[in-house]
Image (cartoon, rainbow, N blue to C red):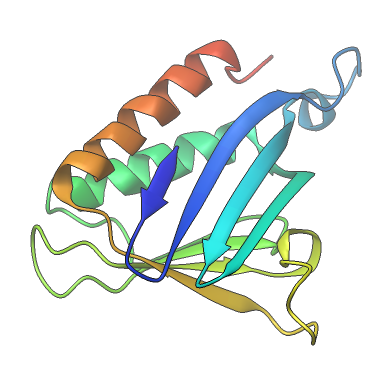
Length: 145
C-alpha cells in the first residue's frame, strides 16, 4: 500500500506472520511489515512487527470509509503505538493524512525520539489503489484462528 504527496511518501507491505506455530491466537496474528518512507530528502526503510491481522483489517475499513465519504473516525491507532493514522482532509476528494511514526517505526534520520508525523495527500485514484493493494495483501495474510 502506497500513499504519496508533495512532501513525502509512505509504503506499507506485509512480509509474513511473526509467529507461525504459536498456540496463542494473539501471537499467531502478529505481522512483520515493511515500512518505506520518504520525507523531503530523507528515505527510510524499516521492518518491524507492529501490526496484527485484525489491525490491518481495521486500517482497510478506515481507508474505505474515507474514500466513501463516510469517515469512521478522524484517527486510527493500534495496540503498538509505533504507527497511527489521522485524516486531516478538508473535504470529499481532497485526501490528506498524517501518519504517526514513533518507537519502532521512527525514521533513523530523526534526531530526537519524539513522534514524527508524515504528511501525505493521495488523489482519489491513488487512495483507491492503496485500498486495493491492502485488500490483496490481507487475502494473503488473513486473520488466523
